[in-house]
Amino acid sequence: MIRALAILALVTLGACSTPPSSSGDEVQRLATEIRNLGPDIDPEEADRAARIAYSYTAQLVQEYEITDPPLIHNAKVNKGLRPRGLCWHWAEDIERRLKQEDFQTLDLHRAIANADNPFRIDHSTAIISRKGETMYDGVVLDPWRYGGVLFWSPLVEDTKYEWVPRDVVLEKRRAEQYGELLPYVGG
Image (cartoon, rainbow, N blue to C red; front, side):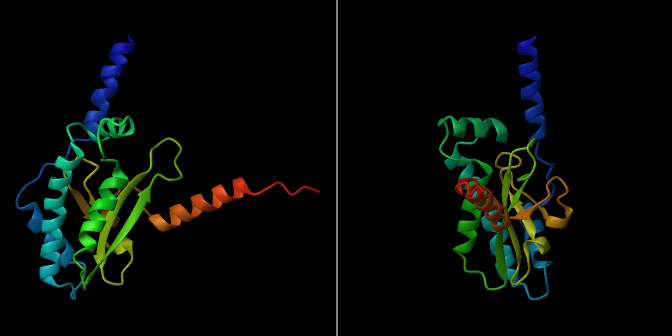
């Protein structure tokens, strides 16, 4: 019985990480989506950002030694069996790489979902937007979700997650932790 439940759990985890079917030139589709963020987006920057998002994801798959669905890989990272590959690693590394390009018409953001949900693990991502816009007007770049296959979508269409600016989540956590550290001042 326990073995059957374990197999069912693995199949369920694997099913959750099935990447969407891809058709056509995904890099070009992402570049078009980025260009559509606004009329003042430099088309060359949009093309470069899309190319880097895909090529760097492929590079990180090799560096992170991705061979499993995301949650199984997470367990391997947490046990020290893989070097990196948690969602925040992907987000941090993609953001860092794209920032090296010093885009003039694009901004990068970080977001976290599920931070207030005790039944789901936090999920981090990078988001690219038009210069000066918020993350809510941007495109999610999420290579973790499908285990090294880049998922992207306008944030407003990504209904799987409710994204919150990373700084907001971290500030709330700092405030909660600070409050726990304050000495008792009783009357």
